[in-house]
Amino acid sequence: MLITRRFEFDAGHRIPDHQGPCRNLHGHRYALEVTLSGEIVRKEGQAGNGMVVDFSEIKALVHSHLIAHWDHAFLAYSEDRALVDFLHSIPDHKTVVLDRIPTAENLADAAFEILDRVFSDAFGKRLRVERVRLYETPNCWADALRK
Image (cartoon, rainbow, N blue to C red; front, side, top):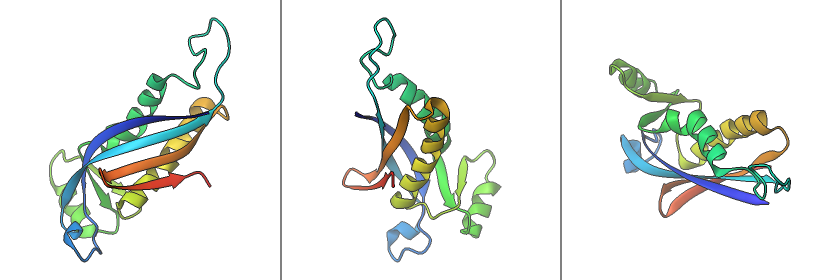
């Protein structure tokens, strides 16, 4: 069975090598869909009976391990030194320094890696992250899929 939970967050970024306007500092209202696979629990009397997992458990884990960090932050590439130095010069600025350029593709991939570890630690082999879909705009998204 596949189940999906959707999240939204706001963040800024820039694509340093881009030849168009995305080279400039800007932001997005991102949407993130996390799709998990697992078996439906069929144990009478248990709170999770009839579910793969309670959606509130997905929300809590994704929020604490990803959304809380990325929401209202500036997502910066570690090699974009002038930008990273500038952001660190702003007192109390929420900056997330990434090991990759913060394109939709790379952010989806990074989110998949983070959440795959989180759900593996929390549920072992009972649940697996199968897909992370990151919408940069309502019409543009990237999918990171289990290989």
